[in-house]
Amino acid sequence: MNPEERAQSDDVFMAEALRQAQRAYRRGEVPVGAVVVREGRIIARAYNQVELLKDATAHAEMLALTMAESVVGDWRLTDCTLYVTKEPCPMCAGAVVHCRLQRVVFGASDPKGGAAGGALNLLQFHGLNHRCEITAGVRQDDCAAILKAFFAERRRDPSVSPARPPDPSADGSSN
Image (cartoon, rainbow, N blue to C red; front, top):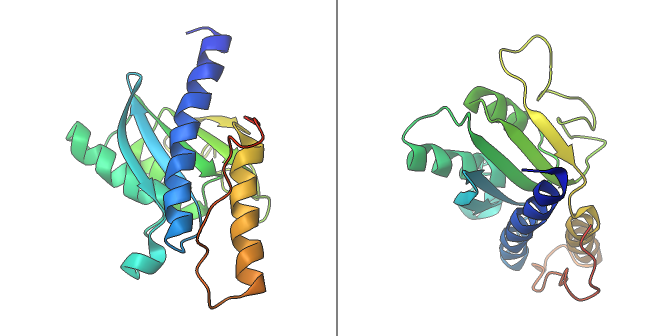
C-alpha cells in the first residue's frame, strides 16, 4: 500500500473509532473509541466502558484487544493495527506490546499521560520484547474536539452525563 492509500485507509478506520467514541460520549463515558483491523477489515470495535462496567481497565483499547483476540483465536495480534481516538495510556500500551500488535494509529495526543510518545513511549521502549509502529495525529482535530466537548460539559455540570457528542463531519474537518 502506498503512503496515500495508507493515509486514506487510516482516515476511514479512524472515522469508525470516532463513531465508537461518540457512543461512549452518549453514555457518559470518556469518549475514546477503538477498532482493530486485520487484512483491511475491522475485526473488533469498542468504546470506553469504565463507568458502565465499574472497571478501571475497561478502556476502549483493552476491550477491543480482547475482542480481537477472540476473533483471531490467539492472544498474538501480530498482523493487526489498532486505531484509537486518544493516545493509549500506559496500561493500554502495555497490553498492545503484550499482544504484539504491528501498528498503533491514534488521533489526539496526550502529553500528560500518553504512552505512545506523549509522556513516555512504551510502544517502542528498547527494553521490551516487542515494538510497534506508531502513526500519530490521524483526524487529530476531530478526536480532540470530542474530548474537549465532553470535559467542558462535565466542568459546567458534573452531575449531568453529556448527551450529544460534536459531529466531526459538521465542519468538514478530517485531520
